[in-house]
Length: 98
Image 1: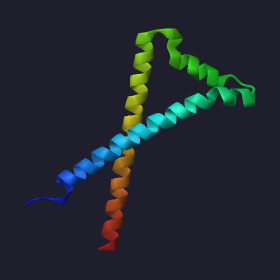
Image 2 (image 1 turned 180 degrees about the vertical axis):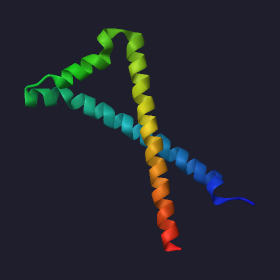
Image 3 (image 1 turned 135 degrees about the horizontal axis):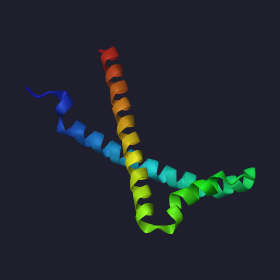
Image 4 (image 1 turned 90 degrees about the vertical axis):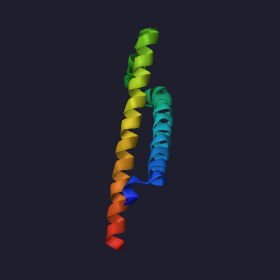
């Protein structure tokens, strides 16, 4: 017996949603990081610059790669969590309709 939960179409949809959300989160992160200097100039603080300096890791390439990988993995983890939550909400909504 085939179950709807294990369908290839559903798996492809969840995979596509996860990849798309990961890309969107990475782009959002890049956008937020790009506005930090402007935010610093508006507020007069230097927190944004400190964050950027930390992420730049004093120009050490290996550390920069590690930071980039960690940020991408975090974005992926958030995307997986969001897809899982959305799937549960959709399942709950479908069972209420039935």
